[in-house]
Each structure stands twice: as structure tokens, then as C-alpha cells.
Picture 1: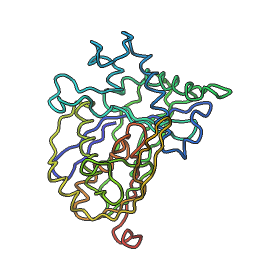
Picture 2: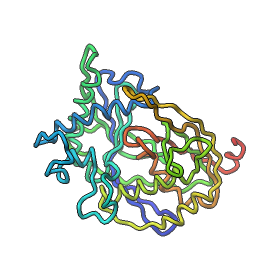
Picture 3: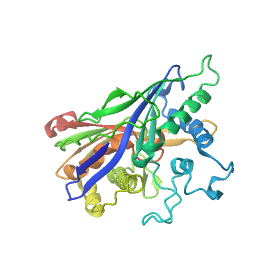
Length: 320
């Protein structure tokens, strides 16, 4: 898919990706629909499975491997910036080229971004191994029953699914259209959001909408650059100024996330944000795309997932 939209400031946004849904014959992670950290269980199983698929040296420390910058596993799992990158050269990792979240007990949805779509065959094989590892105590091992791909997207970013006949061949690319910006909208957090405010993870009392939007702006631009080969220059300062000026009504609470085997819990934000104002059209393409790639810490495995409900300004004022 080639998501392309005008930001309202003369910048064209292009983010290439493909969205899939893998259905398994048996439950993999029971209670996934109610668990905020079901994606973390997939993360712990998928990493070793991907390494088994790709690793040719057997070194325990991937970052010491001479193939670190050429290895597909390192690209997917650690995502080091290429040696010739003109941005983030001093950082150890760029945004990962995929996003995954459980879609019930026996299914998982994932997005492969840009050139990562070429890894579909191995990614699916690793997912199958991860599913077996996660359901190791079940009577039957889960097997891949069907692989679907998004053939189109509705205006609210909901996918229309079609079956992928050949599991090892990437889905064809499509170009869904980002709809025009509405007068107002509501962002509903479907999974806890973890973004930083002044260097610390935000709680409801210290959250600002610009914290979320700034994260999305960086995430989308870096994904387009590192995984799509698209180098574009947005007016980041103007966009962030709009994010600080837009009218926001927030109803947020603090959600505790207890990770298995960890004493210290995580905390994230739950709730909704109502937005309206003249700044919305400039921010809209990034917000819309964020429904597909999530936002904040842990976004790769399901945190920071949200949906947008377009509204008329009068309807939002009545609801508020």
C-alpha cells in the first residue's frame, strides 16, 4: 500500500506498507482480547523464532556479529540505522519495520512496512513457530489456518480482508486514500498509550496532545525514510505548533501493565481525546496513518493502538 496524503503544509506523506491477518487452528494466547500485554507474549516468542529462521553465525551477541548490518533478523528485530544513513546516525535503532497485535485468541494482525514486506514468507514461518511455543501446554498445536491481507481500507481505516492464496508471496500493493479531515474527531485509545512528557512517561495530569503528535510525526517520517526510501522534509516546527494550539478535550486514566516475570509494572494512558479547530487539517494525515502503525513505546507489539471517529463540531460539543 502506498499511503500518500497532503499534510496541509505542502508536504506529501508516503508510507508503504501491507497489512495481514494470520488465523490459527487453535487458540494461541487465551484471553488476548482482554489483555493489554498479549502482544508482549508474542514478542517474547517471535524473537527467538525469527533468529532461528535467519541466523547463520550462531553468535549469542547479535550486535558483535560481522553481519549485523546485513542480517534480516537484525533488521527486523534491532533495526540499526544503515551505515550511510543521514539521520539517526548516532542512534542504535530506528523504528521497527512492522507492527503486530493479537486479534483474539487465535489470530494476529500485523503490518509490514516498505521493504520488510519482502520478508513475509520467513515472518509467517516464525509466527507459526511462535504460536506453537506460546501454546506449548495445549492439547493441539496451533497451525496456520488462513492468511488474509487488506485489499482496501474504509474511511475509518478498517480493512477489507481478502484471502492470500500463497502464504509465501507478499500481498499486492494498494493505495487507499486518506479521507478529508473532518471538522472534529475523537481518538479512542484501544490499548494503553505510553508517550513521554518532558522526559518522563506521561500520566493523565501531565499529558499534552503534542506529546502524542510529536511521537507520531517522528515515527511516520522515520519509517518512510528507513523502510520506504522516501526522504521528505516536513515543517516540523509548524506542525508541532498546530499540535499545541488545537482544541483538545481529554478524558484519560492511568492503566497499570504488569509484565510477566517483572517486578516493576508499566503504566499507560487509557481513554479518549476530542479534537477540533482550524489546525486539524494539517495534523489529520498523520493521525489517520497512526491508526495503522500505533504510537508511543511498545507500539510494535500492540500498545498505543487507537481508532479515530470523525465528528461534526456540533456533535462533539454536545457529547463533551
